[in-house]
Image 1 (spheres, rainbow, N blue to C red):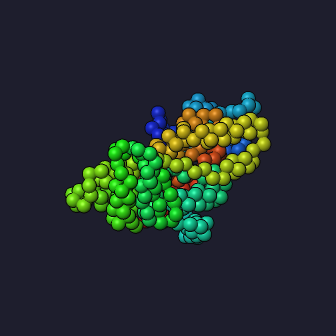
Image 2: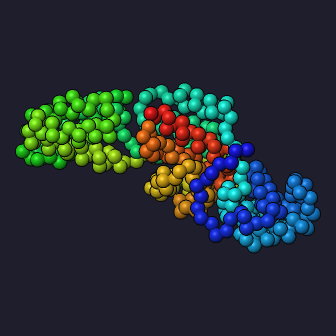
Image 3: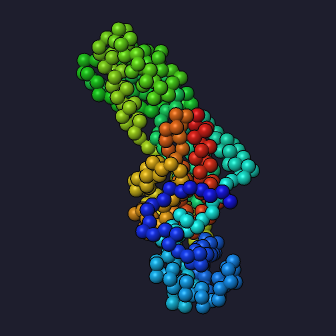
Length: 360
């Protein structure tokens, strides 16, 4: 198996503090939990452990792990389940993350391309979120700057003295509208001249490319345009570099997957709480903002973040980049803490890289 380097939080102690026997038993408890969701006892562990230990010896190790806060007993006579700290230690130090096969890679790529019905940036992200939701059987999440891709048309439309509507039309048909504050004495002819100048100079460019070109040609523009027309263009550039550059959108796909295999009333209550949190979006966007700064896959387990302190959920997310290696967004999944981490981590990682390639 190929080992995956993960971005994780600092721990008070690491898996290296455990001896080999403790690691083996903790790994087996966690893997059993991830597979069945049920506590496991010492007798069952004795049957499946790769080392020969008696149930009594296993119980002694389990007591040590429980003392460390890595496992817990839901009932007095029950077996043991991993705690959140135990899951984190497993993910950080015991999980063997493999690589995707060529067939799995081809499947992910073909599904994104098949689902992509339009050429817009938002459409690509939406289809990627739906695809990863379907493959992981979790909710898919995509967090990225909302933007017009390549400009097809720019128009200034007068609204009232001192105000105009800036309209950006992308090559794929997406439209962005912004209200600008302008000099009150700006005539309609200056707005038309500004529109004509921009359409002649920025058509087919992305917003960052258009901004770079216009700034580089400022001296030429001053010679061609009067002061009022230049003020309209400067107001448009300020808007492009401000709210248009900073806005983020959040796409959540496949929420219904979170309801599968939920039976107990307490589980339903946790999912209801999670749905409420997803609807508010603010905290989730803050969490994904942290993942946006990571070098690779970022994992949040349970109450490590305040959003999921009540919902027993985890996030696995990875950033994706544009052609200049600039991070432009994050893609990942939300699911129960009982996830198939070994399968989903490389899936998220590869999908993020694929989305980055398609963006270029």
